[in-house]
Image (cartoon, rainbow, N blue to C red; front, side, top):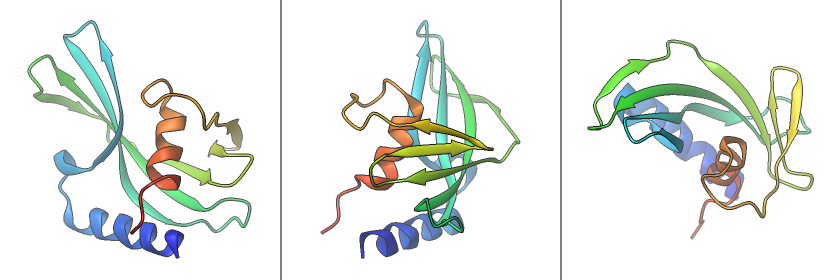
Length: 121
């Protein structure tokens, strides 16, 4: 049920959001003058039975005032497994996710958390 709800949310977001309103799941700051945000642009149930979600990630760079001055035109694909062992796959490389890590420390953890630990009512 949780998986179906998250897929519906991701599909609705990708259909209704502009590039500046994407679902940001991780932001890294660089000296206070620049930040890079990673956002979910699309998401579906994974075709690979070992994973739960296939997503598309976008990258945007902002100046110190929050104005976007660069948006990567690439569509970076990833797959996410929610159950143990938690994992993010980029291309053919699998990255283990430490689910106990604190938010903001690692983008792969933040991606996993956005999809797999989202509250469901």
